[in-house]
Length: 417
Ligand code: GLU
Image (cartoon, rainbow, N blue to C red; front, top):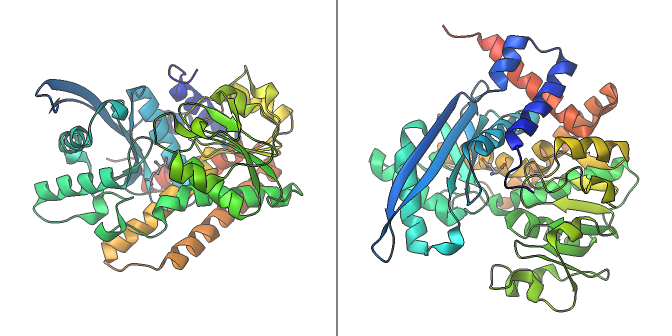
């Protein structure tokens, strides 16, 4: 379903809808529908057995009107330059919706990390960064983690970039380990922000997260953290999945135990026996109040959108609902909190990390979490108000705000030369 879905087409359709509401100038619309810069690299890595293997990678910068470009680096076998471009475009809108001073970018390498050793992934990372380092920089383009990468990957990126500069540049990448200039709270930030958005949505729907039945698709950083924090807020997580498959128990699942004993191991969370095994597809259609897709794009489309039972759907992943699914979900009265709002907590704390790195002054975790919550609540309120004003769905409202901020910045700066 997802591997060959046209996510760039999906991102452009979303932009067109917002452009209509904004009565956006045709030339400006054209500019925003394209990435400002796409770099495609092919590079060799010497594997542990001495063989040479060639990898393809990308770094796409979509728009820098509001500041340096920002966005994660993804390691996944299905990536391509178009998907990376769509993800870069979403980063532009995401940073604008939460009003942080960045444009959007995304990077990726076509690789199944499970097939390679830690040493091979380190070499791949260092060579990939070397191939794209001329467009990276703490003032120009700042990567972060995404699917298949983590704090260790970011440490290698920081080290590689710094070795080539001749001095340490912590601000060139975020999501670093805390002892190398990372921020407290960054690992949990995306999942934490997803739950802040869920709570804000619940308030407007006369629902309570405490006591609600929650299903989370995905048990990576975002899904596992969202599930954990939902549980802390008194919700019952009845279903969850990883790349292997899902598990369901209407009485609830022990998130900490799943994290400590099953996640990332052979067989995954399905090895936990006190639950019914389901597929990733079946999981989405089970009975619940809140559904949090936190895996990959295009999981909910025209084939299953009419089978979703949740009243509230909060997008932890980027692009989990297709353009067609959006219409069906809206007609069915299911409230969708869109990715560019719901999962913005990650890049918000990346922004805090970058500010801390530039100032060499580090914050306490409470300050990080409080500021994150404030920004998420403020953005949620603005998007909610725009949604009511235009009588539209929440994705369109978020895009209206995000696209308008980027368009306004472009117009005010003027077109060079
Ligand atoms: N990869 C994350 C996202 O999709 C985080 C990006 C960042 O922190 O720069 O939002």
